Length: 57
Image (cartoon, rainbow, N blue to C red; front, top):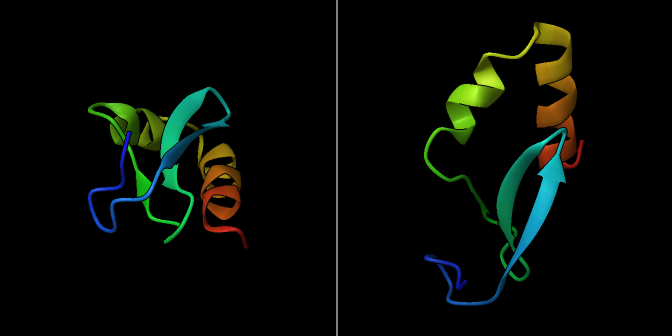
């Protein structure tokens, strides 16, 4: 899969059971349909940890 922003390759990363696509060049993060909703249905503490890992903070 290619990044819709810059056209470079995408890598699939697993974040607590949710697969996200991250661009290997521009670090853009993309989710498939339903994955963002699944993330927001998780407990607040777990959701914060996932978002911190996703953003690298």
